[in-house]
Length: 116
Length: 107
Image (cartoon, rainbow over the protein chains, first blue to last red):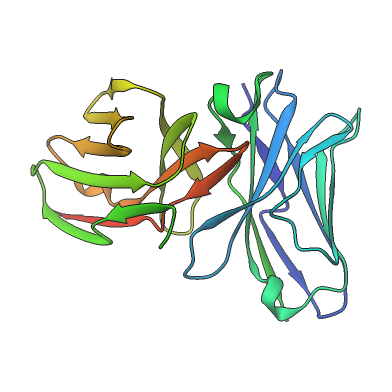
């Protein structure tokens, strides 16, 4: 009965390193969404993926950020050459077949990324 | 002006009080979520609405599509209801969030 699983819960990186955040959706869910919550700010949409496809990446920064959701395994949000401004909580959500408008999203507990 | 506006920004109540949090939006939407986030914690989806009213325990959510407005009500509030409540709308295939309402319920 696992919900959306994100790992790690906390991740510390030094400037210039890479950060990899993982999200395993709920069983039976094939749609994954990533959101970012900067300190003292609200949530912001980043990217919406289905298996092996990026559906909407309008919220992703143009450089250093990428996301994938392979046929097998979790969705990965990858941040290359991290900077202090990347420090935030990154949340993943999933929904069953149906897309953003038609189905409720279930959220993970988030990954808190801290950049030293 | 933000596309999703919540009020109030902060709310303090005494245990047992009836609470209302409001959300107004300016875009066409296909659905609206009410989310709850505890300090340092994860996010829980309380409701997803596209019309009318939903009730779950002490929580009630309503939406008026014509007026582009939704409300979240908490009856008989309790200190464990203390959290940030976030209104989020689904518009053009992405989710847009309000800034959240920080609720504190005192015993």
